Length: 238
Image (tube, rainbow, N blue to C red; front, side, top):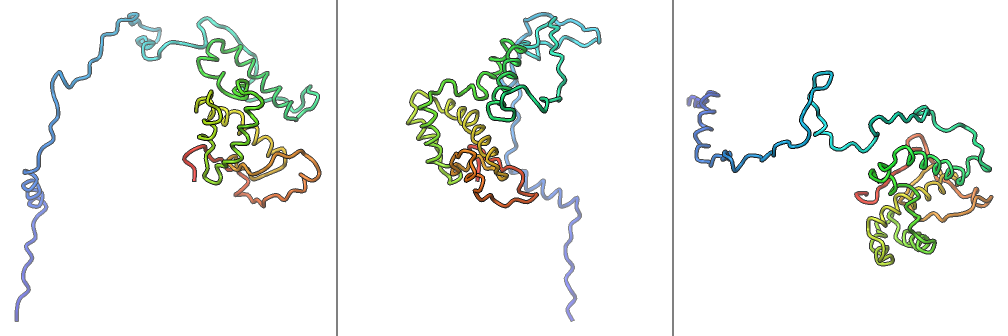
């Protein structure tokens, strides 16, 4: 009767030694050391550091240049943050698109007055519907046609056709107009038509006046999980 052979079990320490032995032949990583491999940090030559009342050193060199608010500026708007607009207003057509545009324009003017030069430094002048002021009515209509003919919901892109149709506009101008003017205008139009399920990339819905026939248009069913508006982006979707 044959006896079972004993397995040659190695202790954890011997296994570790064996791994070190077989790894000795591998090239070791070289860590560069010396003046050629060090960061060159120039001396601070601006205003000398001084101690604040709390004992901390002046950290202005790490914070950059102050753009806003100006020192010794005691401007106080007096408005409460988060209060929002009142439920009623003095507009001729409260709640209409023109009413919303009017209030947005007033808020923008107040912001520009409060920020001063920082309004342009922080690129607020490149935001909102004011971006469309550099576009003519003819260009806007042509842009709308290009977007409708190349819906993002079908995997198409209007960027190349738009660049060919508007040689005076850069890609940045086209994308800025799309995001700041076209998309908000489209979402506003769809929500006013009563749609609960929104898709800013679905360009197949025709703009229609708020008539009885448009109110009878079938609406998609929606439950609690689909009441949130879908938000697709210009790129990186699908």
